[in-house]
Image 1 (cartoon, helix red, strand yellow):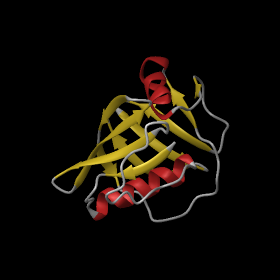
Image 2 (cartoon, rainbow, N blue to C red; image 1 turned 90 degrees about the vertical axis):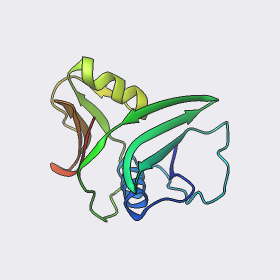
Image 3 (cartoon, rainbow, N blue to C red; image 1 turned 120 degrees about the vertical axis):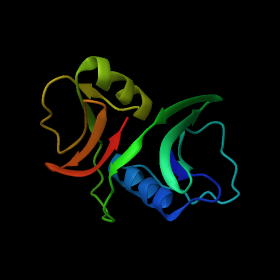
Image 4 (cartoon, one colour; image 1 turned 60 degrees about the horizontal axis):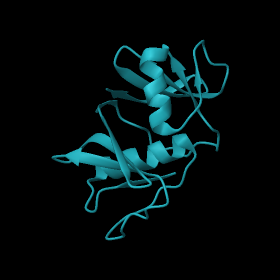
Length: 136
């Protein structure tokens, strides 16, 4: 999996793309005019009037979308490489886990990095600290 932005991204979209890639422990690619490769899974940060508004997952000729609003801006820090897990009620969290191709746990997570899905939002938690939040 690879995270990138649209061809002419705003600073906010680039910042979110880099933070998301760091959190998921996957590479971030400055896309420019580069075309997407069909064999890879790409998460593309899309924007509306300069603000990140969603992700498009492109994988093997298929496309899925997740719309959101950034509720808490991501900090500009590099995180240690760890694979996160998704936690929360199955009805809400399982689609998020499938979208990000991550494991899902129903109960409270003992892992150091989690995507906590609850009440129409996703908290990106690392070592007990909410790094950023998306309202879905």
